[in-house]
Length: 121
Image (tube, rainbow, N blue to C red; front, side):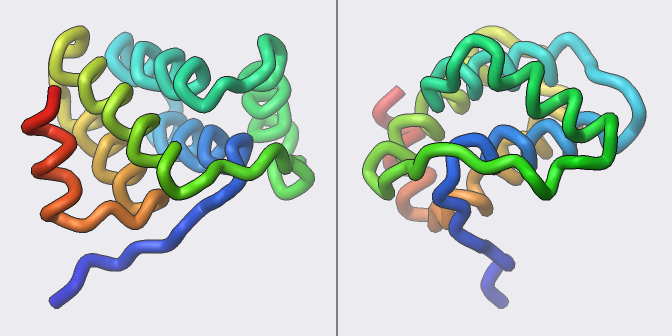
């Protein structure tokens, strides 16, 4: 059975969705923070955009968040950068692995693509 996936093509909403997942247990681990910082950088979000998104989540105004479009080819680059950060710089906790899996679903990255990206790192 295929894993459910959806394609999110808005940079700010990608970060919003990843942030919501990280905050779902009420706290951010150091690994989750590293992944979110790397994701914001890889998505080329403006300096204040992550804070604006975080504040919108806390205030219940997340549905108003929108940003620039991210192209399909760039999604693979972003995913590769975040995956590399996870492999090198985090404790690979369950929460961090969930972040990577969630990002993979948001970008609709299939198993073969994931393996190719991982091998290239």
